[in-house]
Image (cartoon, rainbow, N blue to C red; front, side):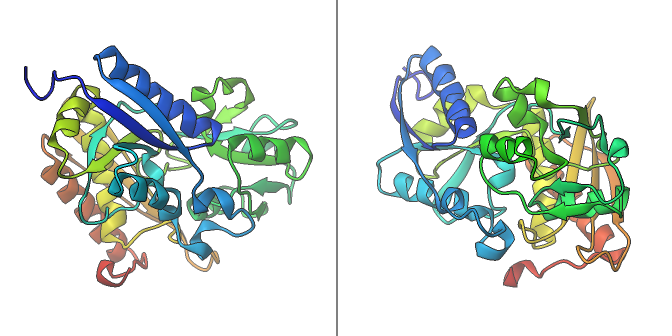
Length: 313
């Protein structure tokens, strides 16, 4: 029996938010269908606990994955399922991204009880988001809006909106759709207007890099076009020294073997205009995808985007 076919006993480390559990249970069902025994290990991360400050001020996206990686390191769990946009661009030594699954809708969603879309908001309306990327893109679309921080899991964010703390909030369409909350979406932003984050809408599965048996077991879950696309997007962010503390967007579309990659960088203080860059190339390997991302990052810097030296990020 080959490594790929041998049934394994697998424990999935997952955050305990409703969306994270949906994602872990989705992977659990797919692996069980292949004959593996799969259980969940629910965990609370620092990213879930610290809700009074923006991620960019308390340590970045890695706050959502560190405890899960410790569980893998200690052998309490074997794989971790992540929203790829929450995964740092560089994984710690000894860890690997074993699988990227087919992407859900990567767009941002406009959610409001009273207004149909961003154009319908009155002057000075309050919009909730703690994403620096969304902040600069919203400012470019509607400089008059008041952007206020919004942290917490999906249900918490919707509750704060329903309580009247905001006129509208911006969320990832993928999360709303996965939880059956698509009816809350009043409008989806065209990527040309609100360029998505690198990896948005895609799920990545992390393992210890020495677990070749797990990597083989996860191979059937991978979706190569999505993997190539998000590899290019993440390469832009890596080359810019990007994290959630950088107002950076990168979004690719894969058609007929050609990857079209668009990126944007903005100044949170609105002292400089958005810098945009785009390019396309035939892509069949991760190395080619990452090279395209690196080229886009160079164009952003040439256009005035201020990155961080990855060596000092």
